[in-house]
Image (cartoon, rainbow, N blue to C red; front, side, top):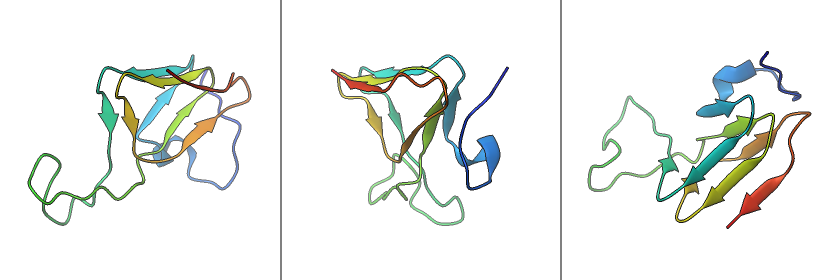
Length: 85
């Protein structure tokens, strides 16, 4: 069951990634966001992220070893906090 305790509308579509049991991001993994109507695209020279790559989870959200989340982290009712290695 996917349940995220949050307000403000938008539902799960507001997030670049969602983990019902939690999320682990490490070893240079990254989440970035961009406006697909304009160039340059991710990986191109001059690319600038929009900073809206939000991530949500109902469990522990972990980052480490160069993991990058270019947005906000939202924890649901079961969220155990955020750990940075």
